[in-house]
Image 1 (cartoon, rainbow, N blue to C red):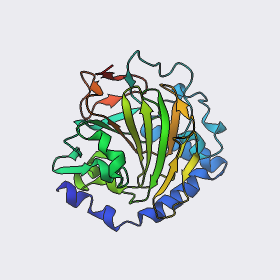
Image 2: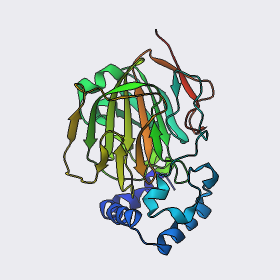
Image 3: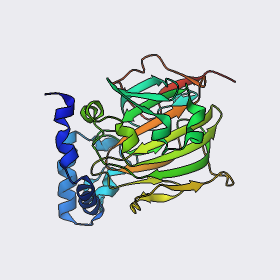
Image 4: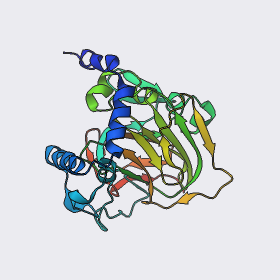
Length: 283
């Protein structure tokens, strides 16, 4: 069966309704039912609770509390590197941006302008730059951290679809990451401009940032922008910047000539938060 045929049912599913139901369940304080659901999830996906700051499954009041659990101190030491990996996950794709085209999967590309919500001026600095797309599976740690120090310039909530973002769907749905709901965060960094995009997916109840809190819901159905250029919101390398309520994908964009990825960084490679990701190319 072709990848496009395999993902056809996703076009028919009521994805928004499923996401709403999942979000309500994940935020519900349901006592023993919540604990039982967490216990089954841990067993099914092989979640290592010994890495959690709080390994006691019974202490989490909601599924979201468990899913966005903190790591114990020292669980993800930061490498001495210009750019560190911002999440646990697996590399979906990475490499050069061909003018403004980002490679998604064989036969599929999408533009930086589309990814960033249609803002050509925001996208222009990333022409011929570099990108990395990292998929977070259900078992992964779901907080996102800064790959390098940065000052926040703007954030945009872009409405969109809620397809799954797993590798099969990436191969079967054209422009997947530029059509799903997403939160675009633009930073000024020692490497130049950097975009960090949180991409939503089916049953991803919400996304949040440390400076704003929960971004969605609400879902107003239109693009919403926040400007922070006149504020000093600065995050250090390795600091938490946001989180997913249930799994999804992060897309990173760097300017032309800014970084070179570390040897061994290739598609399908598993990643860990804090490991060396890239080195700076210019002073």
